[in-house]
Each structure stands twice: as structure tokens, then as C-alpha cells.
Image 1 (cartoon, rainbow, N blue to C red):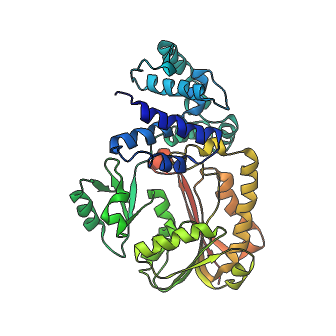
Image 2 (cartoon, rainbow, N blue to C red; image 1 turned 60 degrees about the vertical axis):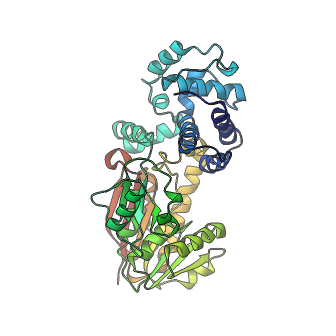
Image 3 (cartoon, rainbow, N blue to C red; image 1 turned 90 degrees about the horizontal axis):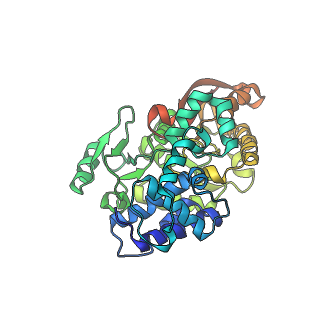
Length: 404
């Protein structure tokens, strides 16, 4: 592979924004890819994947390069040189790469790969918590899986098409997909492709949604005509899935504390041909109280550490702080206590997170069931999804039923 100056500069600029200005990697990369209209798909892939790679392996590369944060541009070029050397890419004779010790880089890599916090490139405190909660062996395997690039998974919008039809349509666009056993609405891309430029996407025939995330709406056991509340709807991936499972019949109340996210959901719903969603901003306790004892189904896709989705958000491990984890556990219990009141007798509730830590998952559910608010509920079943076992994102979901 030959390195091109303008693409490498884009990567360095992106890393500056992510590491030094605390911008989110996905947003930075979106901006970078608009930088030069002449870039082809290979150029764009290089910029996106190289940036993500260096973000993912920041701790390991910084240790090998002997640089510390905050990184100046020279430091970032040293990280880039480590990345290129370990990928077996010949460094051009640019001033940024003068005196790069290629042999030493490989030696240091072999040495550091024996230590998990460097091998999997994670902060010490996250590693400590992971071992405490999952055990040495499971945590090691999970972190290795979280450092793999995530597959692109589509969720077929069954309001507009079927899995077979969409597969054939994409095949005509040279995008090959395969079915995944046990995931009724999922198609997995055989090779990465920009699916957002296809007519199929523009016409709302599918959404990009990881296979594990698709299990959540399925578990809620919705039926056409029900009243369903999605309490932490965000931009609405799971809300739209619920709408298709309900065949657009009944009512979904999509709630969130961020109005901006609900605005995105409105646009997505229009594209998906979904018209049974009411949007509600949670700006006080009023919207919740109005729905007490009214919902057949309630989904709580709770805010969490995101430690199950590091494959697609590698910068999250550098942004997370121990205080946030403590705080978010309080929020999780609070939303369970408050939002569960919307479930009517005989109705069901799903509590879900994209974390792999029991303290955010089954421990929260059992604490809730032991509380006053939880005595009305019965535990039905749970799913613990680990990336190293499933090949998809780490997730947790529990189904509870309110006693009649």
C-alpha cells in the first residue's frame, strides 16, 4: 500500500479533534469524509478505518511510540508511524517519519502484547472493573472481541419489503448479504459498503442496526394495536423496529430527554413509512405521570457505559470515567423505578443496556425487583449477549411482567 499525503493529513487532523478536542470519533469522521469530493471509496475507507484503528489502539501505540497526552502533531505522526509499521506498510521518506525505529516498534509490540491493558488497549480502571465483574478469562475474550471491526448489519423494514426482496435488490447493486440464523429481520453484509447511498436506504427499506440490538424489540413481545412506550427512544432504531413488528397498528409513544434526537427519529420514521409514533420530550415528570398504568408494553433502553459496543465506538473507552459509571448506575435504577409505573397490570417491560457489566444489568433488575416499585413485577427471562460468544455487540435485556 502506498501512503498518500492528503489522506494521511486528514487522519492526523481527525485524531487531533478526537484526542485533543474531545469530539466524538463518528462525527469527526463524517466531517472528514466530506473534505474532498474527488476521494473514491477506497480513499474514504482508508481515512475512516485508519482513524478508527489509531483511536482503538491509542494506549498501545502511545506506549510503543513513547508519547503522552495531550498529543502534539509530531506525537500523532509517531502514532501513525507505529500503525503503519505494524500493518507492514512501507513509510515514505517524509520528514514526519525520519528515524522511525521499525525494528524496535515490532519488538515493543511483542513485549507489550503479553500485558492485557496494552494488548487490548484499555484504561487500567476499566480493566479492573471488567475482571471483577466478568472474571479474568471471560473479560480477556470479551475485550479481544471488542477490538474487532464490527460487521455491517441491516434490519429489514418489513412494512415495505421482505428479507428476500431486499437481498435481491442489494445484489443488483453489487452488495452481497447473508441471512443470520436466529435474527428474523437481519441481513449481514459480506463486504463493507456504503449502503446509505442506495435507493433502498433512501426509500426506507432498511436501517443499519446491529444484530444484538435487534433482539430487544423482539423480546418485548408487541402485537398490532397495543399501546407501547419507548422511554429512552433516542434517534429511534428500536422504536422503528417496534413499529414494523406492530405492522404500523396501535400507538408507540417515543420519549427522550433530548428533543434533537426525537427530531431525527421523526425524519427516519417518515422515510420508513411509519405513522403510529407520537413523540414526547421528557422535560418534567408530567409526561411520565400521564402514562401511569396505561401501557401494554414499556421499553427502557437505559443509558449505560456502552462497554458492549466498543467495536463501533472505540473512543468511548477513553471518554469514560469512573465517576460516570457510578452516576449512571443511579440513573439506571431511577428510570426503572419511575418508568415501570407506566406498565398496566398484565403488561410487560423490557430493561436493556449495551453494557456487558452485571452491575449495570442483572444486578439492577434484581435490585428493582426487591424494591417497593418492583414487588408488582415478575421476572420472566433475560438475555446476556457477549461479543466474543455471538460475534455481535455486547447487550443485556430482561423481560418483566406486571402482576394482574
